[in-house]
Amino acid sequence: MKILLIRHGETDWNLEGRFQGREDIPLNATGIRQAELCGKVLKDESIRAVITSPLSRAKMTAEIISEQVSVSDIIVEEDFIERDFRKLSGLTPKEREAFYASGELDDKEPFDKLCERMMNSIKKYAVRYYNENIIIVSHGASINAVLSVLSNAYTGTGKIRLKNTCINIIDYDGAKLHLGEYNLTADEYENLKRNHHQL
Image (tube, rainbow, N blue to C red; front, side):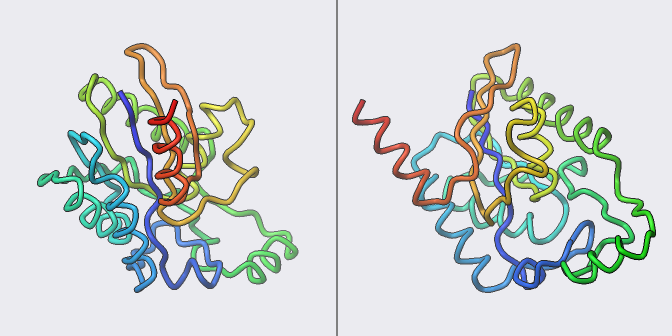
């Protein structure tokens, strides 16, 4: 089976470089267009379920994509929510720099806990929908944690910046999850599909 792990579309806070965390920031006009483009390149995929974080930027992305892939019921999964950045939430890059320079310790959700909840939930849905393809819509820090686990820290957290509505491909063989191509724009995903058809 194929799991398409997708980051939500752009928000105004993304543009400003703010850590969004659990703040419920909606998509902006660019984010809506990104979700529409993402949905269009996935419309010919055979998708059984769309699962999303409860935050509106992810839910709206999931709703736009689900229309294109003809999935009517969207499952909201609390465990796919963004990492809780707590004191860092809402801070711009400069403000985060000042925060750390002050010597104050952040109290964000521990990385191991983030990895555990994301991986456990992905495995749960992989087992539930085994032999069918699913879409999961989540967030930058949460998806990067998954990439980090599946690549043994080759990529993911601290290594790459995920694009809005990027597509990350995970294969499940019934026993293990395997990371395929990742951080793909809609165009890059379409090119990948086209190249596979030519092989």
